Image (cartoon, rainbow, N blue to C red; front, side, top):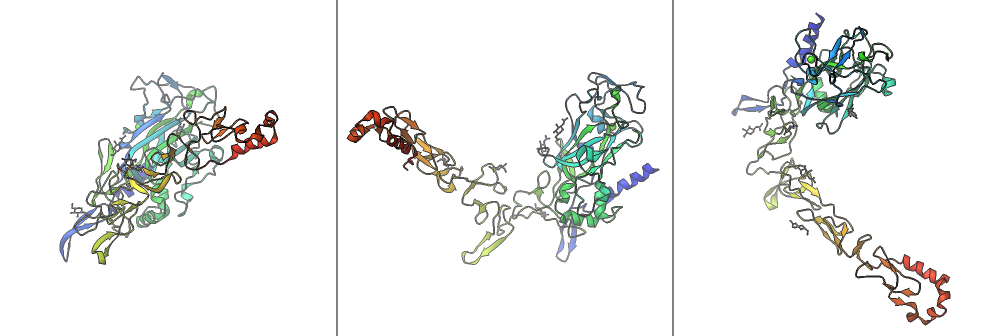
Length: 523
Ligand SMILES: *[C@@H]1O[C@H](CO)[C@@H](O)[C@H](O)[C@H]1NC(C)=O
Ligand SMILES: *[C@@H]1O[C@H](CO)[C@@H](O)[C@H](O)[C@H]1NC(C)=O
Ligand SMILES: *[C@@H]1O[C@H](CO)[C@@H](O)[C@H](O)[C@H]1NC(C)=O
Ligand SMILES: *[C@@H]1O[C@H](CO)[C@@H](O)[C@H](O)[C@H]1NC(C)=O
Ligand SMILES: *[C@@H]1O[C@H](CO)[C@@H](O)[C@H](O)[C@H]1NC(C)=O
Ligand SMILES: [Ca+2]
């Protein structure tokens, strides 16, 4: 009975048919035509489209075969996990299968036989598609829920990860976080990442099996306890910064950090009863199509929006070719009840194309031309078809790509100016080289710019035992001077020679040598 009630509640948002059509054929005073609306696909059971990865290698039980016990019956250890026997194996796919009534199939880890080393496992779910959660994530654990775990999410196909929720029987001890409940969050904190103790305490492994990420409770903050006021939720999703993204994921990761203990401490003499066993991971959500599609299909191994409104891409995230008369925009839930399609517009003769870098055109009277206004993304020109000065064209990007113009980044000292040619090469001052003019040609040295070598080891050798200092000057032995120490002080000045042995160590000679070291190079 309770189960049935839960099932009914579960169905409410799925049955809610708002934003479910993208266009309809209507008759107006000017005759029949299409009317367009913001639209989104139905929520689906996302576990049917997921790829799973379990880490570290060797964490799945059964290789070699292993005996395990349960907390209820710790001394009757009759169960066995054997990866080579289909009846006794517990591979990851059993977290996503459909189960016959009453018969749980589950992935199972090795036991905690290496205690006190922690028993850690990561379960990573990937969709290769952004999806928007519409209902709770429900993870079902057989034989007890972990006493410490963490849920993480990625929005960029697993490149970066962010904490989503922390779970522990003692949040302070495990994560130094106070325990909170999602039910107690308010409109301003609906997207807070918190630690909850609700799903980690021991209540008997048969009684409480699920760990939740509460999407509904968060929706209820805006839509009321029965999610009756969805309009208010949709309004908030449009206006509250970061709220939509909070419910959007491409990947999820469960980090299992400590298994169920069945009590307060670990019994070292029976470590066979500590392990993880997950029978189901329910993720309900819809493809994110930026309100430009009401269908999402599984093609070539990935979910794909069936884009309308002349948009395209996996998430309908850009305008179709020849429909780029202005920047792409996501559809909007507002105004209620049908929202705004924000469709892409066709480029027609007389309609000024701006390759999506501007949303505005203006007519210039005395030139008799229509031109794009305020080109973005470092573009310029009548159609935003050129790069601004100091930028050059990205040859691997189309004209309507946000990355179409790349900054020249010319070295300020080494280059003549901050402009570059079509391949990104800057114009260098004398002696400088390299695409950005931040290197020196051979026979030049870098010192706030490139200067010709004064000395080197080949052609401009320091003479009479002098040594070349960083190609900038010769350090001459006492008694010699000149740029290459080519000149004897005796020849230059008779007086210097008199009493030469004494002069060697004289303070005046030393000072001269030091002075030579400090002389600035000539430009
Ligand atoms: C689980 O993933 C996290 C990153 O999210 C990583 O730091 C950790 O080492 C992984 N643990 C295991 C057991 O693979
Ligand atoms: C992810 O989806 C994109 C777009 O549908 C596809 O091109 C790519 O091959 C997919 N990658 C994987 C690893 O499935
Ligand atoms: C998309 O382009 C087609 C022409 O190919 C046009 O008939 C249709 O009305 C356009 N849809 C929208 C939403 O602009
Ligand atoms: C050039 O454009 C491609 C395609 O958008 C982009 O991936 C790449 O990062 C761009 N290159 C630079 C240097 O911005
Ligand atoms: C840009 O300058 C570099 C270096 O002078 C040259 O090799 C390249 O061909 C030039 N590219 C164009 C398109 O002119
Ligand atoms: Ca199962």
